Length: 95
Image (cartoon, rainbow, N blue to C red):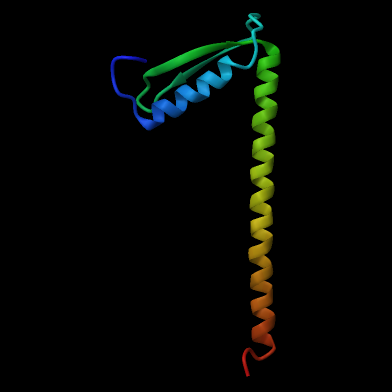
């Protein structure tokens, strides 16, 4: 990647690729990931063993579940505020 400047998107993608490459030293190939930049330029590729694929899938699943739970908590908090406001207004608001 030397020789030219890289966009923030390309650098983020390169960092992602590095994490895939760091999963394990297992050289058994169960799959390959090719990372492309926004314009289709190939940033790099990584071969992955079956355990690497499973680990990456579990990590992403965990992250997505955490995000969904955080959104649910935020939605519940917003709904609670709305319920409190409705109760306040039904009670006559400020007197």
